[in-house]
Length: 275
Image (cartoon, rainbow, N blue to C red; front, top):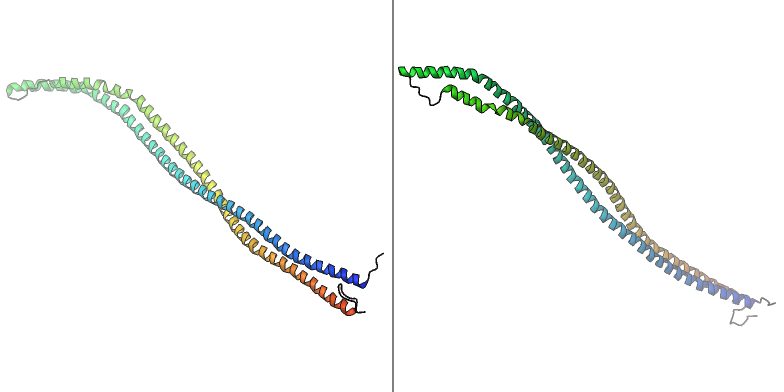
């Protein structure tokens, strides 16, 4: 069994202290290097996340502009189609009234005129004969066509007009029905466009919220990038200073133990014993 002499103890202690000093120095430098390497990786990750967030922010902003523009366009379309529907309904009302006049009131009035024409024709015949009789006493009356015959021709001309006008009632009704249906369809389209526009406006609000969140994320990543950059440097300095401090303490202990061993006479490895 090896006997532990003071010289061997001093040698072992010397080696342990020197190894501790070397380990502290290497550990400090290695720790600082590891922190700086981790800083690079973290900064790369943060920058990648920030670039992705920035691209997303640009995409969201473009989508928001598109949605807002589309919503405004649809609002204009909704208003225009709604106004067109109201105008078509007004035209249908006017056409309905006009159809009543043309196919109902006018034929009825013409029938009334034709009903009065026989009596007027008889009166005209009497008047014509009287005027011709008076021409012998100096009254200037020499009509090319008897007055009653002219009235009879008017009756012939008016005979087919009421029925012809009444025959147009179906066409008037068909046209008015078409205009009315078109007005109803236009109103329905206006409502559908309004619904789509409202959906786009709601989606735009959601996208706007995403844009705000993305902006806040970019700010957080900026702060994180700054924190990682400065914090990693501080940590590397702490690791380096800590390692150097530990190494210095080990060298200090080594020197102190050497002085203590020399004074006690135990000797130091490589030196002669004082005893």
